[in-house]
Length: 293
Image 1 (cartoon, rainbow, N blue to C red):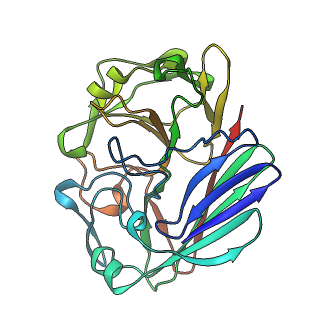
Image 2 (spheres, one colour; image 1 turned 120 degrees about the horizontal axis):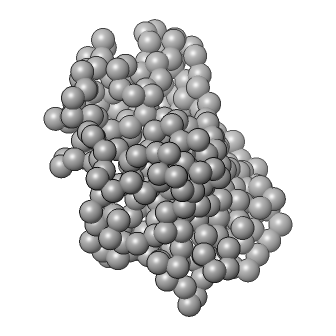
Image 3 (cartoon, one colour; image 1 turned 120 degrees about the vertical axis):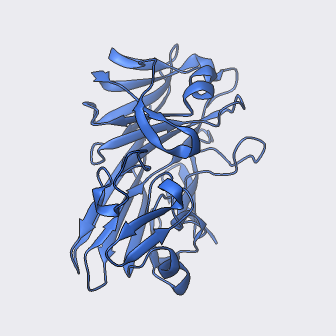
């Protein structure tokens, strides 16, 4: 079920299928979010929970038993309930079910709030352990922005401009989606910008950064400065992706709490980089915001 959000001239749509924000338009009618053309990629703004990325051999161990899930977990394929709703916001809720417990042996409550702001929107996650034992999880956003955003522009006209000059190397994505080592090409050493080219993703698949200095990044047309800024400062990792080999007209900016499996990981969920372990009754909140430039 799609729900409309309204604030001033801005309009957005949120969907109970996957709990996603699936459209955001400003007063000019510009659509900022990718609309899921299956010729390129049918996704739009999936929620990555309770894992981010792929599991090694499709499984990760916990004291409660093994977790077996497809890449990025089950939330993106789940139907959420509406917990709260206002004119400018909606809060979706997902709880455990017999189907989720087969994959992830923990009772939980995941609430996702999408709220319009004066100049964009904010997405917030609240994960609560409703069970009797410690609960590990990862969570992340996967927001796909149209790129280009305006008629007459090209993908290559855009750049990702970070808030600070970085000294970061991207973790390499290995066959099967595992992580290990670093890319041969460094895109964020002694610079604050990555000029966008499809060749980057044809070779690297995904740019994966851990511990960036910047609290945010802008997707902007280098000539006009128009675009969007994402504040992801509450998240320790960032993924950047578009479908390799497709020359696709979108780019995903993905704030992560946790990541896919490393090729040499222990195989225990709690050992995954940046995984959160909640005590019974404990809740973890995270949010990111997007501002139109």
